Image 1 (cartoon, rainbow over the protein chains, first blue to last red):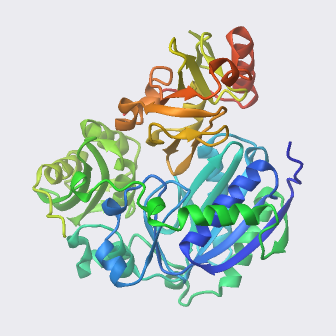
Image 2 (image 1 turned 180 degrees about the vertical axis):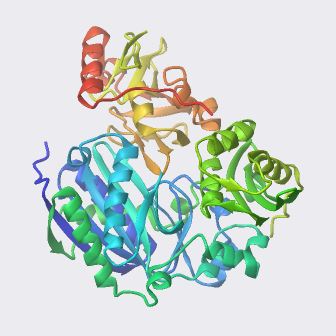
Image 3 (image 1 turned 180 degrees about the horizontal axis):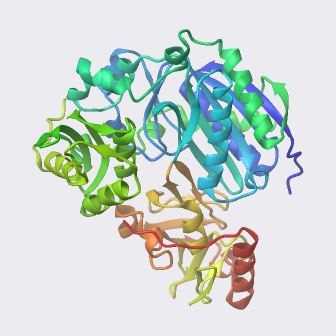
Amino acid sequence: MTVRDPKQWRLLETGLRRAAENFAIDRALLESHQAGTSPHTLRFLRFHPSALLGFHQNVEQELNLDYIRAHDIDIQRRLTGGGAIYFAPEHLGWELFLDKAVLGTADMTVIARRICEAAAAGLSSLGVDARFRPRNDIEVDGRKISGTGGAFDGDSILYQGTVLVAFDVERMLRVLRIPAEKLSDKAIASAGERVVSLQGLLGSPPALDTVRQALATAFGQAFGALFETESQLNPAELPLYEDALAEIDCNDWIYQRNRPETEAPMREAIHRCRGGTLRCGVVLDEPRQRLNQVWITGDFFAAPRRLVVDLESALRNTALVDLERNVGRFFDGYPVQMMMLGPDDFAAAIRSAVASVPEPVDG
Amino acid sequence: MQACNGCEFIGTLYYDPEFQIWVRREQNGSLTVGMTDISQTVAGKILHVRVRRPGTRRPAGKPVATVESGKWAGPVPNYFDCVIIEGNPAVLADPPLLNADPYGAWISRVEPTLGADLALADFLTGETAFAGYCERVRNEGIQCERRTG
């Protein structure tokens, strides 16, 4: 049985590392926490340039491998769920290792919200208006500044997030497998409207230590915790780290899921209607007839600005058969102003993309 | 079928002490494993399921399967030494089945290395299990719901 002080946490700073080392530490800490041999922990981490897959994602379906190899970028698989991301040295990672008793609930949605609200409060103390966006993002004025995800093992949880201290939008787009159309100057500008860094908001990037301090203070206040700073794993964690590193620092681990690109082709279409032009891209999981991802850009009027991002997010992993119903459901609960444009136009644009000829797969 | 706070319960199945998984004894000595209604509710809509390869031996504590819902990933807990026979192809193809039909949509069939009796020695069943199941539901304020779409 674990005897752990719910209010005395460890603040662990593990520095700039390879992705395999960072995730071996994740695994060691989660396993050790579940065994009762690790304290509750707030960890800060950084990565050498890395493309990081969600736990269940397929490598070739998510990443632009040619670009990644040409630019010496690491690939690794996270313990946590969610989508692929590009992590650069100028981004700061934060992680919490806690148990459900500290959080007072087993409800995963509530846990994610409580942690994200605390992280948002920390970022806001730096002078930006950061807010939690359900389900897992932190945004400033509709633009994402921190993405998050979690892993659990019994009663122990690992919840992690990124902070874009500075940000190279083009590089992010080139690392991820997204349609060529999205790499045009206009599309890069459009992506830049959806994601924002502290540097972009504040004019210059704050010192990493300032960001760490802001987050630690906010987590401490939100959960009533005091911190003791460490820079090394404890004796119970070290052997677990070595075992984990041996298992994940290899292609067998990274490529354990690698259904081919051809099973999830990218398709694009342009839908013209009275309200304007909608350009739509989709990645369709053909065997499952499920939309892995949807992108919408184009020339039309819809407010608020975040409408499109929220719609894309709501439609991720939608079964094709449920498309119209899910689009309808989204707009039912969403305050929106559109000019000569309706929910049906979005559904029609997506249907056009689904019905189009897939883009050829390189190589 | 019995229920607490909308969380369904089947008295003939076996449950771990936290009521995270259910286990059904098959006539050939194998065991079928799935997630309880409590687990699928707490997890939310399940988007990915992975079951280890058939023939893999997994000791107690090492998961047979992992699931992902929202942006959470984690193991389906495993309490006994076993060898994997198969994952449920229907669930692997359509993971949200675990939400829609948690007791019909089994996850894996396994061969318990030391036999079904020993594997299930610490599991609960029948009225004792139902009492514990309801206690967890009430203590954690869980209200079960079925997700579709």
